[in-house]
Every structure is written in C-alpha cells, then in structure tokens.
Length: 290
Image 1 (tube, helix red, strand yellow):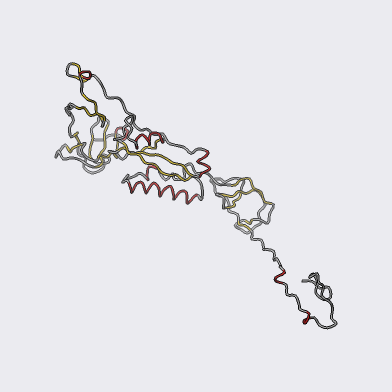
Image 2: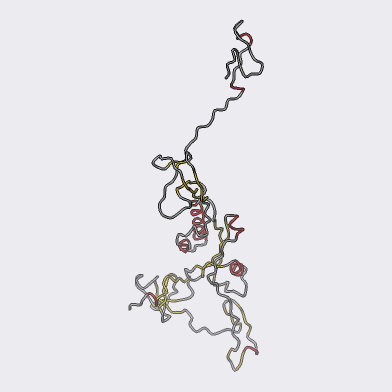
C-alpha cells in the first residue's frame, strides 16, 4: 500500500525488548518506520526490503503493587486508589527539545565554546540542547526523562584557520559517533562545521602601489582586504563571487655594513710617504671612504 511521505516517520530504531515480529513473535532489534495510523513496520522506510508489521511485546501490562512510571516509583496507597482504579497520575517530566547554545562575546574572544546534544536511546534521533538540559540528563534529575535520552557535549572551534576549524569540528563529531556508537551523528551537522565561525578578514585597506601585483604581474593600486588574516585579495571586503588574490612584492633588503666587516689596514700596510690614516675611522688614506 502506498503512503505519502507526510504520513511516514522513517529511520526509527529500537534496541529490543520493545517490539516483536507479528509473523514469528521474535524480539525485534533494528530500524523501523511508523505510518500515520500508528502501525510500525521493519525497515527504514516502505522501500527498505520486506516490511513486517511490528507489535508491542506486552501491550497491556498489569501494574504491580509498586507502580513504575518511566523509572519513577509510586507506592500504591489508600489515597491513590478509589474503587479499584488509580486516581493519581505520575507527575509529568520534561522531554528534551531543540534549544541550541550560541557563543557569547567571551566565547568569541576565546575562539571556542561548548555545544550540547542528546540522543533518544531507542531511536536514531539527535537534538541540540542547552547546558541546563544537558546537566539534568547527566545527573539523572527526576524532573527530566533522563532514562530515555543520553547527553554529550563537545568543544566547538569558531576562530582560526578556516580549513583547520572545519576539520577540527568535524573530527570531534566523528569521535563522538565512533566512541558512543551514535551512528549518523556526524551527518546531523549537514557539513556545517563552520557554523558560528568568526571571520578574521581585515577590511578596507588601500595601497598606493609597489606592494602587490595581480596574477598577471601588474602593479596593483586600490582597495584590498586580507582574507582569514593571511591572504591579500582585491576589494574592500571579502565576497562570495570570484575575485583576485594579490601577490606581495618582495622588496630587496638593504645591505647593512657593520664595523666588523671593515678591514682596517695596519701601520705596516701603509706605504711610506703615501697618505695618512685618520683616527676617526671614516677615511683611510687620501680621504677615501668605505
């Protein structure tokens, strides 16, 4: 049967002890998808192999004397029972939601800051969260569904060489993916590993010439900027459309002559009767100078 994409939740995942195959009643571990009716099938989506209907392992559990709601225990008492039915619901707990942290002015000066994420334990579902939510999950705070989500934090670079910043952030995401077995975590970023990157461009510079040449070797006069703090380029500021890189003109270094390089003649080397030696060191014989 065909279902439009709007009625399908693909790429869900279960670690087991949750659903069984409707055909063999075996415990199911792996990817599944859910349609708008609430039914769940094996596979990442309807096109992923043969899709088998999944059912809950224990759809109608009988609550025991000690009632457990998501790892919170509520003791059955006379106050909680009325005519054989429960009249007290467990207190609601916070579910993590998308709430990213952004760099502060101090973070921008430091060139890095901490980002926080969590994963739903039984699905390939990642969320960027704030520090408060991260800390509550990590400390297993009773106010939040800590048993359903696992938290992690990573140091995010925002300043420096652009290529190095990209590779550093990407490597951090891949390390978490491999170490925690959070499959697909690095893809969560969609290659946006330069998010929040602080440009190091130096803008609105001007040269009157004899500092740079264009790639054609012509002397350049006009506005320029230094991209990423290293590369001089044509124009007041950096733009996304192609523009020329400028080549610095290497100026010859002046030759500095020191007294250690001057060889003064000794008295024995001075021809007799031929001129004089000035004790000031500025001239030797007939007024000549070095």
